[in-house]
Image (cartoon, rainbow, N blue to C red):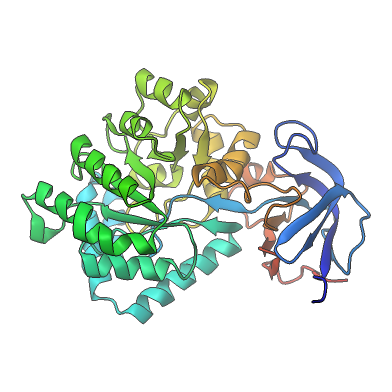
Length: 399
């Protein structure tokens, strides 16, 4: 068996490793750096000038780990731009709008769903996202939930069963009956296609007892736990997520002191979704308060048809710094290693030997430009699992 071809990314002006043992500060910064990978794994990180079979010349650019998007809803059909326009004109966001996407997704064929999801996944890759979690939740019956998970599984191993998104029309007024379905036959059929289970703990969706039942059933089925929590108003979601040992509590828009203390004393990651707060005109989470308390945090896009239809992690980073009081360093870490921790992964979100070769070349000398030049396309190229994806046409990949 022949040895794998090695590739060096050389002349990196500034390398963000997220490994403090490799460089300066919490981000493990290395100036004038290079790295070598073979196959889909990084094998060496160090100063510029390393040699390999092939060379990618970074030409002084900043290189960061690939973004880890730990919360998305990429499998859906239909369009809700009219709803967005109405919301911008003053109509408040309500969880019930999800049913519009459920109807469209149920009507869509398998090929159409796969095509739409593939396009969104490719768009996310061009935006620097190298790992993505994808939820179901727009099927809301056994057949369609399984179908959505099967489509999601074509694009990521990080698939999440979200049968408890909202109560479907056929169960109107019978939420407990629907939760029983989710916890029994629907979960039985969905669990072989999912790594995680999630529920929407919110007014207009499911209460704490119903979500607790869903999480308990998912745990018995061998799935990891996640929870939508405290998006639209204060509620029990965050503390429920901590009590149940969820990997993440997502949204965290409205947090009490007790919520913050619970997160700080746990391994549950507070995953912020600022593009959704932008789209729904909700207040932004006070990330500074959560970080200063010692809790772990992540940033994710929450790409979905209703409350935040974007795949731009750069946009989320800019919002987090501008409106959530995070520093650029904290926001970049939250969008990379923070997302990895939220997915309980130690092979992504970092640039260190043994990790997956997931890199983003920025057309900038520093990651701070993601905030300093908001809205400007700064992703020059992406390496995902050792495969190169030039984004800017004039980027010279191989010398």
